[in-house]
Length: 440
Ligand code: PMP
Image 1 (spheres, rainbow, N blue to C red):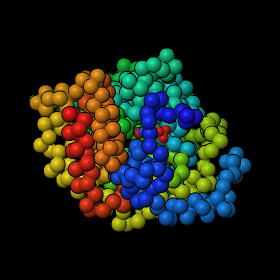
Image 2: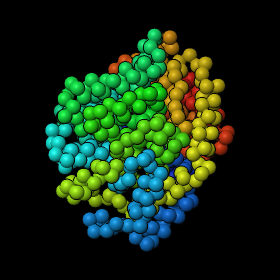
Image 3: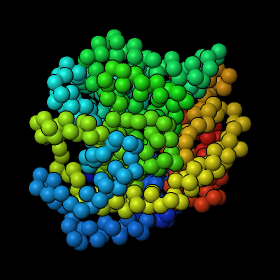
Image 4: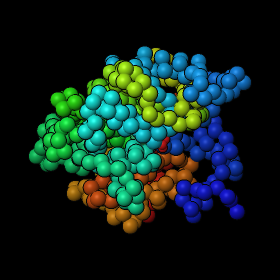
């Protein structure tokens, strides 16, 4: 009997024993093409030599030093590199061990910032429905996935949720893209006014929505309006790039591609590329300086923040992401994925939408294409697709609809940036077979 507490108690999982480029290999020798990097983690594949070498060298020199006593070279160098390539105004980096921790740090930083500048009444956070920001209680409260929140609700802090920017399912038949974007962005202003502008500290959103909707970018103009509203009411804009950041959309920071300037950014997943658990929260000097000149102490911290080995891995990853050929290659491969998905699945009777950015793609399934009606949740389609895909040797990331009747089951694809030109078609072909098996 296994003593591991698995994610699904009754899952009978294969044992992964090796990683080789785009492939994972199990104890029976079966090879799986990793088209989702687990959950958008393994951007450089599974056997990246520079990252492995950097980790070994770091462990041999200095595995760990507590940030209460020391800083370290890899943490300093990685922070320098991130800031040099971050959106304008972002110039401080707080390292953590993962995405939820980054979001928790961002929420607490926003709160402490307003305390430091003498606006203690600003404690409300606004987020969006059908979003995911992590599984710790604060991050779960920020997220707007009803199913994930349900049983923990009494423990969650009060956060209000506005509409996502989810054009496929929610734009009115007569509404232009621009009008739709403006309408849903203006919900932020309405919510700020409802709560009282002097009580709102921050708005948090994913520039390209990952796990809950499946690679959904906002329509053009949405984030311009969001930024305007945040500026008008003094609300901090936190962009959660835990999934869509670190080159995934074809830009090191996804917000650059979406044309929006945040006050705080969270990253993780692709930062360590699966080689080490590492994430970060980045913020503007305005926020940092308020704390530096005020109490001088960010009232937060975990034992492993700024971990030398984890940041050494992150440094080796980011150096590769900044290779001048890398982001153009992500965008080029993204074009091939788009083509392969459209040519293989575009005519499928139950494929409602194919959308994405860079190497971040979502395929949404619907029962009825005309009405965009999702499959009944009881059918468990996402789970069946996952099982069929694994049998076909494909790791993808199927998720059920958000069970509010609006979004359908979808599959998220986040393949490695190192794949070949032929791999997008391999992914599409295996995915199509998995759909056919699951839809039976
Ligand atoms: N934010 C977003 C946008 C995410 O996609 C995730 C993970 N899927 C998280 C936060 C939480 O990250 P972690 O699982 O590393 O805690």
